[in-house]
Image (cartoon, rainbow, N blue to C red; front, side, top):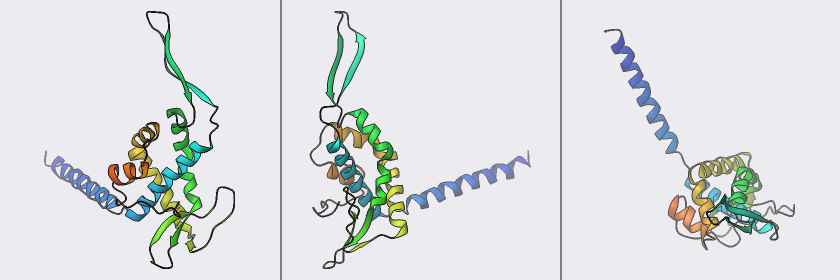
Length: 185
């Protein structure tokens, strides 16, 4: 019995240290990175939805037959459907490599912006493309999706008018209430 007590105390100490360690890791979230990743995530999903073929449709609903012999289903546009959104979020964080840190020359404020246009051009004015920026944004994007994927999908399905405010400000609280400027993202 005396031999088990030090072992139990050691396990308890190890458990406490792991909990404290996890708390410190959580405390190291960089708000600017997470706000930038959240904004970029929304922009990338919206762009991908806009690029989808509007003629493509998908059947949704039940494929069971009701007592009247009919199926309850409908055909909806694929763009922005739940299936499409789930497909998009699988790879969307890889787009964070196309972002850099922009410093406004007048205000010295920094923001994360897409430096690689979707047509392949590169926009480099006042943008820093350091090695770790894309990696930080990608990690933040993955963490955001891990915690808020269902919320993101629901907001896009409902076609909410201000998804940035709803997800990045209200739900996740990664951003302050001010909207990103038009030249950002």
